[in-house]
Image (cartoon, rainbow, N blue to C red; front, side, top):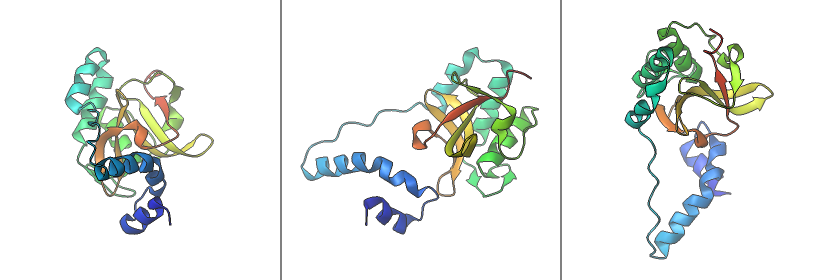
Amino acid sequence: MSKGQAAQAVQVSAFPELYARWEPEASAIVDALAGGAKPAPCVDTPTASTLSTASAGLSQIRKNIVRFTQAGVGGSYVWGGTAFKAWDCSGFVQWIYRQAGISVPRVEQWRVGVRTNNPQPGDLVVQNAQGPDNWGHVGIYAGGGMMYSALNPSVGTLLHPIAWNSDTAYFDLLTYR
């Protein structure tokens, strides 16, 4: 059994395919510790406060979206949920845009947006492709390689690196409003 399969058997993750991605780094850490070598320091990731200073040049609607997004951090992941801090990824996104006065569908919110290669804070981040123009996860772009999302039942709603999931695309829901 691979290390990823063993971890899945113990943890029963909502995203078992993600274990293999981190195996080389985890093995390097274990090898370094076993050999007595000191591992390299972790790279700092931006925090919500550093990201908010980067949003100074944003439009008011984008600032509002970012503010509502940050208010949801710490919420629980509830499959099919749409209530404040008790939502799944698309319920989280729908709640945020509703607070900003924008109506988006319950699921597949990217269909009302325009795909962009130059995302701004407040844009949608879609991940985990399930086919052409279909993704399994959605969140809000924070800038600096980070996103907010209701990730899974284990971690809930948080700010995290976009690189944690695969097949990423971005959608602007504001340009043509």
